[in-house]
Image (cartoon, rainbow, N blue to C red; front, side, top):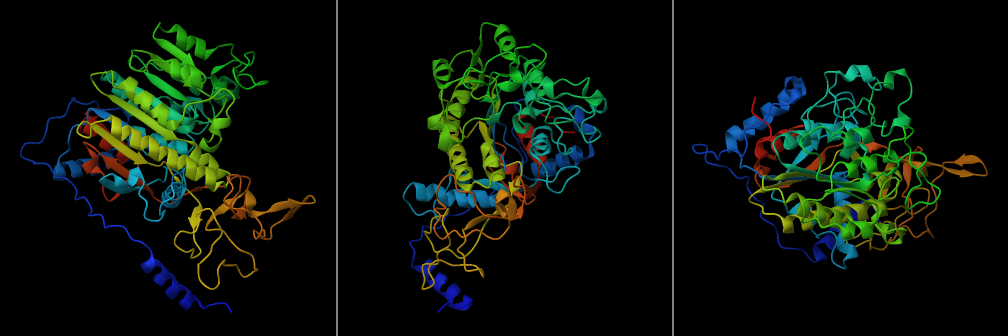
Length: 526
């Protein structure tokens, strides 16, 4: 006989108290500096082009208020970790996943990011959307201004898809400001290097999809430069010291065979091999496409490295071992980038993006999303081990969330990728339709309906005999769509190092730019 909900909850409470608990962690109080003798900034700072933007000014004022109250410690180096699509439920599920994968209690496990002493919530809406995309959210973090969705590096006055409209709206990024001040800069991503998040560091475009010249079609796009070309022609300082990710196709011509994927070529129709142009810049410029080439680079040198390890996005971590030519992990990329950038005595600014968390969520594939999050967390641990907390500001956040949820009263220790089992007399719980359900599910996605005999079947799938912990299992979704959508809920910000004391409360996403800019001395007070 099925237990009542009251009995179920009572039983769950007993199960919870019977489980092994961990010692309580005392919260770290926000640090305050002596306002009588505030430390001098390392640099005088610059006033970026977008300083007159209303959203920029509002965020600058909010951060200035924190500085007035607490002061700010100067940071020589900055590392911005972005888990693309890393919602708070993703962090929770990844915590349990990572612990269970390591054979320990998942619920009480602590991710490295969760050990950082300062945290806040980030409001991720864009200038024109409640639920935003990666282009506008990444632009907010690296320029300090809220902009329109689907645009990169241009203010809200620019019109989507219209090149002429961007004139005078180009915003300075943290990376451009860093180059002007003589710092080293680097980009690492598991997505394409021309994809929205890394491209926010260097590109100005009214359409995030204009990654190569072949995508620039129609009169409104005629005078635009594609994103890959903007990277190679980036005019700031002496350019990126390291830029490593996926995405060879936007840099190679349609006549060039991809070095790894048989039958694939580049996308460019203008005849320009941008990888060759990179190498031709100077003897210190190197281009690598696989693990062997990566391993051959001396990152403790003056080498300037363009690494493009896939024709499109890099492999998911769960699939990386089977890659034809081999490719480095996000941990290895992060360690290499820090090693190279640390050669600059003036400091550096580095972005590390776990871009494929987002892609797995779009595919309602929680196993890969959680593995990508775990790998990001390992990269954060590696960065903390390689840097000094006295001079390096580390910020971990997400650009936006996704619709994955955790629900259903599973017992402590139930596999996070499994079906809901209470551990009580009912065992595996079932819905009103008599079918079991998973702890993780999505509000939208491809599994909302299935095609049976050419017709859509939107009844819920019976998972009784399905291994939902398999890496290829696609979690159930409610609203049938070709691709799961982003979510509009706030995301977390974790921070440590000088300047991290400015991370607190509920913050506008573009305040992250001002925290970094003021702590590093790259951005002047208005």
